Image (cartoon, rainbow, N blue to C red; front, side, top):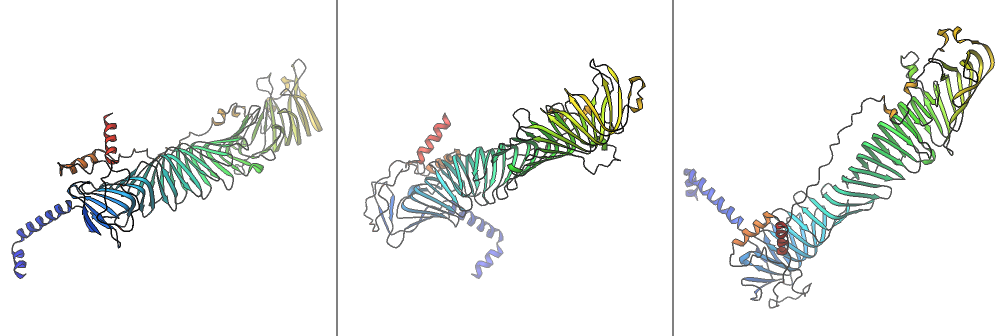
Length: 619
């Protein structure tokens, strides 16, 4: 021993060469490692099977046990083709790979040269996070890929049960790839899709093609999506929409949290409420189902659908809250409303759909010293009449969908342009205004307290008689066909009718006069004409579907061909047909003898799969 130590110490170069040669020899030995029998109850041969084939049977104590490169195979009966390093295992077959993969079946074929296996009959593949069951399974140990095309089922406790016609399991990535008639059943929902990538470690599911997630209270549809089955959070795109409680949310991109009953959407959003006959649009929205509320911004538009004339409400931000019996819409920051015979504009608008009350509010943050204070006061147009004030209330009949009345509080101002003069305006102002509607047209107006009027008086031939300027405690006005028909001054303080030539030019406008006809929206498109430029975020999106690799591909064919070169005079067992059923009844009898007759297996499936692949490729 001392001599050996001194020798290696004195000859470091030889030492290195020796170790290198030893390592190469060990590597070559490992690469040529064949299937090894670790335990067998009995051993025999049968010329009816194939020359050199060995038959192994279990005994009463334990099963036949084979090992190969980290894999263990247990069975009741086996045929081992030593010259081809090929194994057929029958009855109660168990194949294990370390502590992570465990497969059971009635029948298994395994090639030590290609490390490919085929299992059939009540196949169960178990890994730490899931259990796969199917009738037929292909398993490639080189690529760590399992494949079935005879319908399979995967059970994962936290996610539910997944079934599909075709499935692949990538063991290194703990990933399933399901195609054709994919269904995931969870106690809270059922997911249907054509293609699904599912990761067992984190429960992440990626949806491709038309997909639905149907729960007790909601239904999700998309054509590209992601769903975390562990915490019930999803992200959906491409014609994505969510249906719940007679309400539908659509958008380019939708985020969904089932536990919080919350959804948010980005870009080209439409929320349709069939019960309340309303539609809300915008480019960012948040929906809280439990609170029955919607928040939407970026060109937000609410549409109250009416049989004859829908009402459009637009603002920077919209909030819709409350159930169908007590629905409230709030619009703020540059709020506007439009219908064919009515339009309005204010800082914010509050609509109570139960009472039919619409409040147009001037925000207190805009003081009278603000240069834009007058412009920011609420304004309402009905046909030819413009009304302004600090606050405006419009009341509608919710049953007939007709305008009923309006109230203008503080600094009430009604302006009606005289149609025959160039710059003449009929003006009525006071502390408060109360108006009544008939067939959606303003026909009666009362100005209460500190009332003043400038009125262009004309005769039956529409000739100007004079300009009336008066003050009184209150004023009543009758309007017919969009023109002032009669003015009644109540508790008149003073007044005078001036010929037009004698009417002072400086007195043609009351203090606070502000004609805002150019701001009036004349169409739905006009609601957006003074909005700031809209810059929408770019939806990054989820990655497109990557077609799965074929189980039998060129690399597999090369491995099979290479394995066959080792035994040119023998049929290539790795590529030969496999039996569709075991050659004898299952399960085996408890007592097995070495003299039991074992028939040669019938033609099977693996080679047929290879032929189909080659035929498809040629076509």
